Amino acid sequence: MSLVWVYAVRDGDADDPPAVSGVDGERPRVVAAGTLGAVVGTVADEGFDEAGLAAAMEDLARLEALARAHHAVVVEAGSAGAVAPVRLATVFRDDEAVVAMLRERADEFKAALDRVRGRREWGVKVYADTRAGGDDSPAPAPGDRPGTAYLLRRKADRDRGAAGRERARAVAESVADAAGTHAVDVRRFALQDARLSGRNEEMVLNATFLVDETQEAEFRAAVTGAGDGATVELTGPWPPFSFATADPP
Amino acid sequence: MPELPSRIDAQPDTVGRDLGRLVLTVVELLRQLMERQALRRVDAGDLPDEKIEALGVGLMRLEEAMVELREHFGLEPGDLNIDLGPLGNLLGPEAGRGR
Amino acid sequence: MTLAHPDDELSLVDLLDRLLAGGVVLTGEVTISLAEVDLVHVSLRALISSVSTLAVGPDPGEGDGA
Image (cartoon, rainbow over all chains, first blue to last red):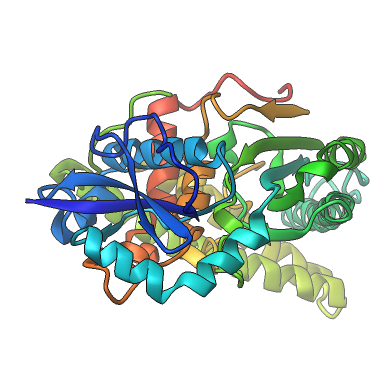
C-alpha cells in the first residue's frame, strides 16, 4: 500500500513536476484541482504512516534525510513559479484526498501564493560578543579579604555582562530595522546556541525576511551595511516556508 | 555534513552521569540565585564589611565545590543547563560560557 | 558577510527552523500530519545541539580568533 506525501502547492497551470528525487526516492508529480496544483510524491506505507513518521522525528539521521529531500523538491518546484510550501511530514491517504483538500482550501492557497509571488525568503543572523567592552578591572579589595575580592569580581562580571548584552541587543535591532526597510514581512526564530555555530560570539538575531525580487539588491546592501562591527550572516534565497501562512506560527 | 548518530539512547553507564547532571544543574541554579542575592545586598550597602567578607568566602567555597563535583562527573560548564523548549534554558543563554 | 547559495550545504538547524515551524499546516482530511506533534516534548533543539557537538567535536574549526 502507498501514501501521498505533499511538498507544496502552486499554480495549476505549470506543467512540469520537479525533476529531483523525493523523500522516498520517488519522482514527484502534480495533482491538480481547479487552478491549483499540489506537488506530491507516492511513498511507501511503511515508514510514512503515523508510527513511521513519529519514529522519524526522533531519529535525527532519518529526519535530516527527509528534511533535505523535502526541501530539494520545494526549491525545484519554486524555481518554476510561486509556491506555498507545506509543513514537513504532511501525508494523505490518496490523490482523491489531496484534491478534496485543494478544493476546500482553494481561497487560502490562492491568498498564500499571492503573498509570496515574486518574493523570496532570506535568513539574517547576527553574532556579537556580548562580553565586550566596559571596564575590565574590578574595584580593588584589601589583600586579606578574599571573600570581598571574590564578590567584587562577580559584581564586575555581572555589570560588564549586562552592558554587553544591551549593546548586542541594540546591534541586533539595528540590523533587523535596516533589513525590514526593504522587506515585505519578517519572522523571528529562536536564537541558536553558540555550540551549534562553533563561534565564540553569541547569536543575537535569528530572523527571516520575505523580500521582493526587485528589492533584493537594496535588501542585501542594507544588511551588509548594518551591524556596526558585529558579524552578520545572510542565507538564501529560500522558498517562502516561513511566509506561506498569514499569521506567524 | 558530519554523519549524525541514528539514535540518542540513554545507555546504562550514562544514567548515573545524566542524573548527576540534573542534580548539579539544580544546585548550580541555586548557587547562582544566592550569588545574585548577595550582590544585591552588597549593592544596597546595608551589610557590614565582616558580613560581606563571610558571604564572599562562603560563595567562593560553594563555587569551588561545584567545580569539583562537575569534574567528578566529567561534565563541562556548558553541560549544566536544561533546555525548556520555548521557555529557553534553565540557567539562561550564557550559562557555562565565559567563566 | 557569508552568502549561502541554495545548493550549498545547508545547516540542519536552519532547515528545521523553517520546515518544522513553517509551511502550510493541513488537517482534517489528512491521514497523518505531524503538525500537532509536540516538538517541545522531544526537545529537538536540545537533541540537535548535543548531537552536533558529538558529531563535530568540542573544537569546531570556524571561529573569530581565541
